[in-house]
Image (cartoon, rainbow, N blue to C red):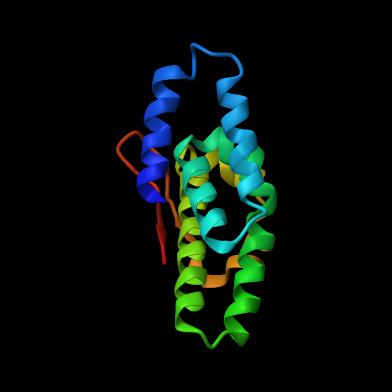
Length: 143
């Protein structure tokens, strides 16, 4: 799924500007995949994240908290190692998605997010680290 995402990104970069219906069609299909099984959701999250912070803001951010909470609930009752692995991969994709969104400008994005609400959802899994932002500094998330 990771390689498919990179392939999709390459095709997006080549044909995205040339065909008016290409980009909306790709995003629509990826959003549909968010409603399917764990692996499809994982692949869709990675692909949507690779398309950039504006795509994440518009299509993923509204559901990221629910997806995280669903994973947490499922992990509490899950005994199958394969399913646990898939749930952890999905959580990894959710954290990656948040890092894409927050990494595009922590000062601006921090104003958009409700920090208390995000803290309630992610707990210590997503800890933005930022000081006085300059051109020399960078954003990171510690897991």
